[in-house]
Image 1 (cartoon, one colour):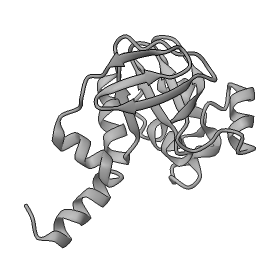
Image 2 (cartoon, helix red, strand yellow; image 1 turned 45 degrees about the vertical axis):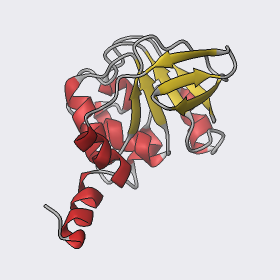
Image 3 (spheres, rainbow, N blue to C red; image 1 turned 135 degrees about the vertical axis):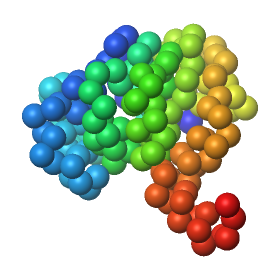
Image 4 (cartoon, rainbow, N blue to C red; image 1 turned 45 degrees about the horizontal axis):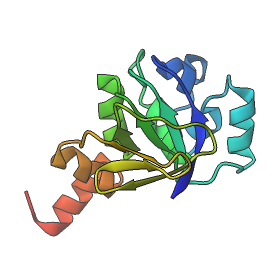
Length: 164
């Protein structure tokens, strides 16, 4: 169980998540410091480690629209955040899978900042509100990549196991 650390609306672009002016910084170890940098309050909480790893960002439709920058997904992974959204922009979704960002598609999610959330058996349970919501599962192959921590760890695992 974890808390909702940030609630956002629809059409949250990659420029909000990771502004383009920081594109010179691409190392996954350095990108987290710029996550939501224009939301000074939330960024300050992240840097002060006031947001627990495993906390959720809850968003509406089309999360991650805009530029195809992979840093928008990797900066969230760097803080150990998870994202629940009504749906994700296509390129952001694939970038997120590639970097192992834990995300959940939940078309009817209802949650506010501070709500306690649990994901069990394909459902998002909002403990605070006493409601639960169905999720849309990712294809098994994509979920396996996320579970492995991203495309590179997944590929390493396949190579070392001898499976194809």
